[in-house]
Amino acid sequence: MNRNGKQPAFTIVELLVAMTLVVVMLAVSGVVFRHSVQAYRAASATAEIMQKYQAITHQLKTDLAGLQKDAEFALVWAPSPHLKSDGSVLDENGDGVPDRYFSFDRLYFFAVGSFQSYDPQPAEGGVLVHSNLARICYSFGRETDGRRASQQPDPRKRLFCRTQHLLTSDSSLPVFPDFSAGWNEATFENLNFSLEYQTMSLEDWLGLDFTAYKREILAKVLDLRVADSSSREGGPRIDFSTPQTTANTIHMLLCKGVGQFHVQLWEPGYMRWWPEIDPNYDGNYSDADTQRWDGTANGYTLTSGRIDTENLKGYYFNRNPSEFETRIGSVLKFTFTLYDSKGVFPEGKTFTYIVDLKP
Image (cartoon, rainbow, N blue to C red):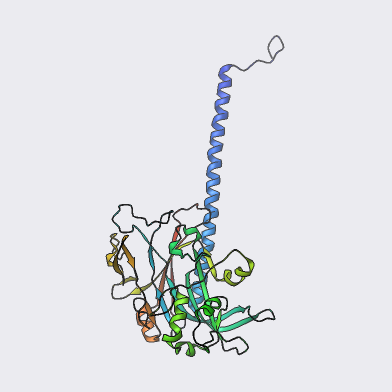
């Protein structure tokens, strides 16, 4: 207090210093807050991706632990070019060759274990179905408009599925598939993924007439043309729109936001994993495993053609236990890219997971 009894006023310099300090503190606080929000979003996105990773790897490990080596095993390799957001193929240099490929593979096998499903058909409200043997397929599902995962440019919306069909001799269940009146594609299409069972033994399945029935079932399960099958479209269709439809399809969805799924075997002859899109990583896809280059109006595309024999030539397929041990070996390698729902990681995160097939 001065002689006149008044509080001393702040000088202009003091006010400017105080204001500068306030501005600096606000700026620092803004930076800290922004980084805190970014860290929180990154942590949440990482946690979401890791949940997907654990769901996929746990299910793979559980199913493959019961792998039935004297049944059928099929690996369908399905590489597709990377799409831009407008649905066109990514080709930055305009040479007609896609700059990048993703794999939308299918893995099909039989496994023993404790399997359970639900038959919604009986009028009394449905029954539980139990079996210790199931045919399992990992593949990408279709959207309600019928679009494949390879046609969906946004990887966050791709649907990765696991389907199972229990093999059962339960005589109280409706016979499925019912071949008494011959093959009916529409009936099988409607019931194939809502009824997760087939009333037959493994011996019945292995001895099923390939030309009349089996190729059609495989085409629906694997979602591709098998020999001269009448259909090449199949696979699970996931519909989120109504509870009635969702009840019959949502259980097949393993994860949403799986950008690619690639399955490889160890190839002793090449001393590397097989198949590979670009084995020597030189950016030239002409040496892609078991594939061919095919000229199209849009340039060159990597294509797998179609299966043209009972033995699924062009893919790996077998039902011989001794061949299984020598050809497949003791491990399978899975590579998949996972995306978070908010797009925090626009390129996703790619993981490699190896399953030991030794007993």
